[in-house]
Image (cartoon, helix red, strand yellow):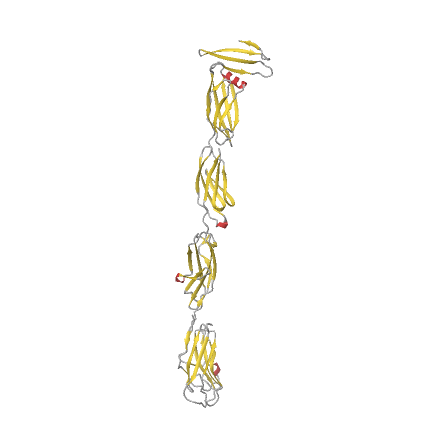
Length: 471
């Protein structure tokens, strides 16, 4: 605030004749200077004065000064020159002057600036006689000037975004000649004082992703500074990624994932490999992880990065586990009798592409049969007469034969299940029919067990199904 000064009542303005101050003041804030002068004592004067007045003299650090007319008497002439006078002026008292005082000026032909007017040719350039008690020291303090409002805790170089999810931190500089003695911030409603006139502050208690618009200013005894406007958004939360294995193949796992924020990138690692999936703001998706081994449990590490709109934040890495499907297996083979169908039971939960291979070998003869299937359960096996004939001929005099079975699963390569075996037995009367082709003879062989000793009756049948020969 500027200086307000009352001029001393009774101070002598001029002695011969005599004037004294009867009132007045100087107000630096408004620039108003007011003065009342009263005549006292004596009457008349024989001197001729061209003017008698009081002026305000202001001094500057450079040594310069200014003179401004306040009030006075013009051309009083001969005779009784006693009279009251007063006046009010407005001047710029904040233009850099350090002091001001009132000075008496009077002129005839000579004026030394003393208490009485004498002759001087340089009268108008002289500040005049300083009236005692009227010197005022001005307040040269300027209102503060502030600049460079900025975010002091930016996220990843983004000056408009706070690195904090729940607070904003700002600072500004005092760039004027005089620093603020108080500083304030506002949300456009009322001003809140910053403790200790600090030029920086942190405001907490926000939700992630909240945009905060605010103002700051400084103040000192000379007044308020300019006002600065600021906008800072709190940082968004890190995305949270979740995932689960939804299906398992022989060499693959299928994973569904989701995120609490749109993602621009998903990273995952499995079996020592690391992959990056570029996204365009998805919050969910599916991964098909291939190149794996059957029947193996894998840890899968997954994390995501949010889009630029959500501050490009990384999620925590999560770990889920998935087990690939095992190689399909033969779980059982039913009893097998010559000439009859039998059942092979397969465990194939994922209904993968498999080939059931069956064979009997011996005596330089081999029976092979392959059945392609995706069945999870029972597969009925029916051998042709020709195939049964080959089974019989592996050991024509034997009462039992061994059937071998193996399941082959087809993927990037073939995976073989453990080889199985089953005995084909002869109980009671068993027969194997051998059917010729192109009208060639057919033969029916009948084995009859007596006292556990095999006997054989061989009947040859002609082309037209008429008996040909029985041995």
